[in-house]
Image (cartoon, rainbow, N blue to C red; front, top):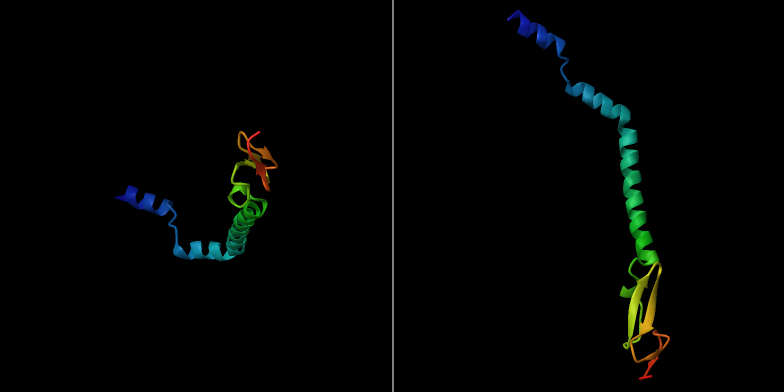
Length: 94
């Protein structure tokens, strides 16, 4: 039994008090990094919405045109057999 008691004495016990004091000591950094991470995610989502990750969702192409997603803009091209700029007009068969 002496061996078991010696081992118990050698193993430091994790006390609730020490955990709470460590959290109090470092809570500024925990809260700061959590807030910073949330802010980065929110700003990233706003940037995607503003720049238009999928500009064809909100661009207005002519009914006889096809929209192609390009970085930061949508490219409207008239379908085969039509000519024009793709946004305002696609005139009849060529």
